Length: 189
Image (cartoon, rainbow, N blue to C red; front, side, top):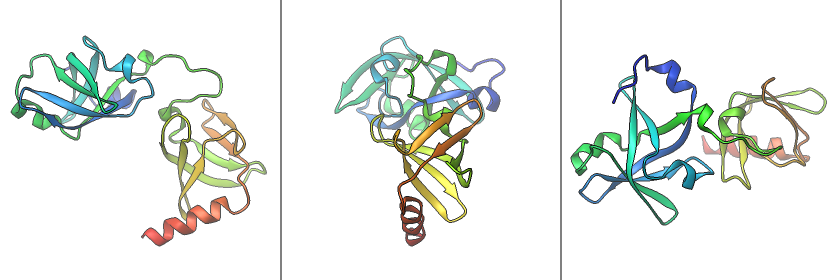
């Protein structure tokens, strides 16, 4: 089902919750790589997810769900064989932002942090958050800087303040952290 008025604007205002990894069997099941810390809430029978193909946002209803090795194996309503799921492989699954549960103080969604400007305590510009990697505990900000990619642990001792509405994260990095990460980034190129 394609959503009326769907397109880039609607898609961009949704949060990623998973990515279709591969087919599972021949009856239309797929394995999902999670991009949510709430998999049991998001991946349950009857839940709605959204997928985009050729600029059109489509609604998918989960007809069956089971977890295997910590990842959901799902089947969508109306899809019954492997040939029907192949176009979905590699596709991102999203939900509207208003469907996300409220987080406790000091916790943030990845999409809230991407695009934030990172500054040091003295106001020095570090860069802009491009991504957040890792699980809820042990996440790192992936920051694009003039020297390359820098990984900054998302820890209270380092990230002193996070102003989501203002799109600013103030950090107090341990000595050498920014140089270490930037120099490792240059070696990979």
